[in-house]
Amino acid sequence: MSKHPSEANLALLAGGELSGWRRWSVARHVAGCDQCQHEVAEFSTLREEVRVMAEMPQLSWNSLAAEMRANVRLGLEAGQCVTERPAVHGAFSLRAMVACGSLAMLLVVGFLIEQPAPRAKESKVAEAVLETNGSGIQVTEGSQSMMLLNVGSRDVQYQAGGSAMGARYVNSDTGQVTINNVYVQ
Amino acid sequence: MCSKVAAAAFVGAMALCGQDVPLDLHSSIDIKLPPDSPVALLNTNVRDSGASQRGGAMVIDLHMALSLRNSDSRTIRGITLLVTAQEVTPGGKASVTVPSLNVASGEAFPVRIDLRLLRPLQAGAGPLVQVSLDGVLFAGFDFYGPNRLNSRRSMTVWEMEAERDRQYFKSVLASTGPEALKREMLDSLARQQERPRIDVRLSRGGRSVTSAAEPERMARFAFLKMPDAPVEAIDGWAEVAGNEARTPTIQVQNRSSRPVRYVEIGWIVKDREGHEFLAGSVPAAEGDLLLPPGKTGRVLQDTALRFSRSAGEPVAIASMTGFVSNVEFANGRVWVPSRASLPRMAPPSPEEQRLADLYRTKGLAAVVEELRKY
Image (tube, rainbow over all chains, first blue to last red; front, side):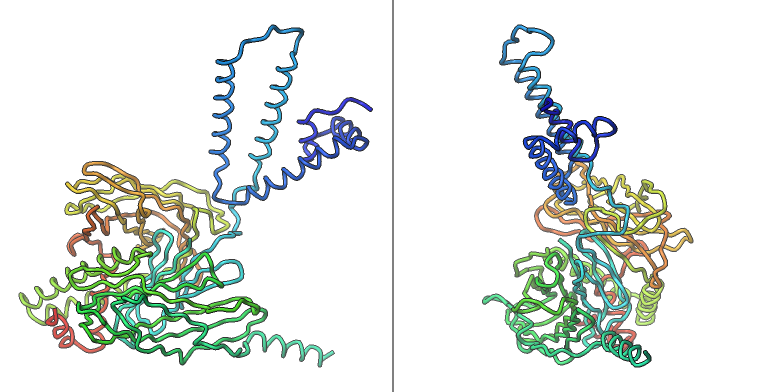
């Protein structure tokens, strides 16, 4: 059995992002190694979870990434303050290799996280949408909708503001001004 | 072959035309008023309501005519009812407000709620629609209600505008006579007719709602000078692409001596042909703004708005103008602009709309009679 590939290469393989001979060589190893197969499967699951989370519009990945970077920097600075530098034997100590591995892992995960679905310029909008038409104001969520109708109305005045849309008119039956508002949360 | 085509056409036509579906309307609507409510429900008429099947979905038309009675000792000036359909649109809710009321203690008044719901055929049990009280505004600006929709502030603004406009029309009548009042009513109707009919589509989060092919640009607001306003709009911008405007942001400064907790900026858009229309307003987010005297703050709206004419023709945005349309101070008092400082494109107040409609339907004498009641 050849030496196990690095975690970074396994993560890149799981994401289909290794190229050329490296992919061939890592894939060849993984095909015959249960441990690496398991790790690749875990990376694939992680990647899928990240993809699903990236579809949630409320999360600010940039701020999360910035926070992660700030935490890493803080951790490194704190580490420098409290640890004594051990004597370096050879080119890489075990501790330095673990640190490099962890950083590489962090970079890979960060890379995966920063590859969300492309920002929507297209018309597909999952959340509730408000719109006016000749009959009233409608809020639509998927295939379901609720419309507040302007029945018996003259000179309807529509106005959008904040998360609401309003229609104002005089009801011809009652002579009263009616103001319909529909809100999205 | 012909018979198969005919059968398919018949099935298609049935699906398109819709089939009536039985629906227990009284169990479909749940109207809840608190035990100490200042209004009592006298009657609910759902006569013209019904449901029909359209393909795999059900369309439900609910037409509710509620008859309410003022069971309080004070005169009611406005009422807001909250309407929810949790099974159909969990992320949406609606309200129906009737401002400019003059309902004395013990008197009854109607409120109409007209809804259309579209939902799958299979749905859970329980009422389709829940109606509850959000607030009642009395003469003298007293308020009752849970105020979940901030109906207190909205109804206070409308009532202040109503008092301002009634005062103006009464002074016109007193100083220059009925003919001048008639000219005011005709001018109001003409302004309402002038306002272009624009359809608006709104989505939260400032996310695009179109496949905007046009490049995005940052457009700046121009602001109307309003010397009597307690808050001044200093700077503002929005991301604009074709007929879509996203994330309008406006910097405001409190130039009054009192802290301000809410500001609303009216938003006028000019298209490339030079036509102006009121696009809406940019309100401060609830609880987001507390502006001490002299300080500046930011009013931000995390939405995308798309404008089109009734035929679906996009209205390309050329420029934008803003004006301060109302301000709420930290002590709950509200400021509204004077009639003189309002731009022509600003919508008439609900009271002006009601009086102008009264003139159109019943004539000048009815308007004069109405003004004498206040």
